[in-house]
Length: 431
Ligand SMILES: O=c1cc[nH]c(=O)[nH]1
Image (cartoon, rainbow, N blue to C red; front, top):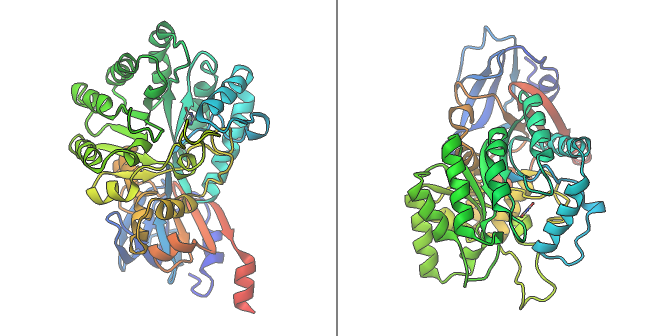
């Protein structure tokens, strides 16, 4: 045990051995913080999290007094089949439709090798910034075919000991949607995926399209994650139509609505009624600040921006709401670093959370998405969970969210997968 230099000791932890981290501050599942020891087994699972544990049987023991341990960050909504394609898929119109068209053009020619290269690069970046699980929507349609979902299924399986990847079969409609094609292919796509998704507002027949998605989910026993109402036009929304199907197909607790920008445009009474329905049916929400603050039309009157949903109100009403990256450097969103703390900060600021709600933003990148992704017993700093966590030099959750760590050690399944340090800051402090 090297008390003076925990960071060097953390870095030297050999993979595949049991170890203990003692004296740190641990963020527990209910968001509280506890001065606790952590024991990790050789199988990469947490053995115990409690103060003053007997660590004598551990292969290594590192004193991390003064450091904060957070469960790994979760990104509940990405698009790994199109990440990093921005340079050759421009979207000069700056609209959602323009982004879809730009991607469709790329998807017609994109080969598995290209998709694989870009996806693994982004996964690596996310992991290095402390993200230990990602849910990714993957287009399956006449342009993209099955290239994306097959390639990402391979990445998911190959990387499972380093990062948990969940795939959503994103059955994207196109103008003149071919329902025969959808009917013939949806089961095959869902078999490769972990959840069923789509974007009903784009469909020419949203009720029929929603029925097909929910039926496929029930048949496969998989959850639903919809891109829902990515617009601020209060005159049209499909929230009730989707909630009706949650009831009819008995998908309570197994459905997520991503985006739901339109909630911000609805009169308050309508918003409250729908949010209450979501709460009663245990439907979760994913907000996507980068996406929702970006695309719009050139003419605001004709095409308002996508817009952020009512983040603070949904949270305060008790709806489970996670925040996520959405697209990373593609025609839908030109930016993105895979840093969930950055996303948490944008959510806090743009979503009108208060300064005393920094921990709510942390919840939105940890326990809230864990619930929506169904990670259950496998997630969190508790006995039996997969040992996915980040050891940082922050003093508490508030400082972690407000400014982030200068030093971070990312553990996935009990193995150190990345360490980062803002050396310049540290050097200045040491001088
Ligand atoms: O249709 C959509 C919407 C958002 N992001 C996508 O990649 N596709």
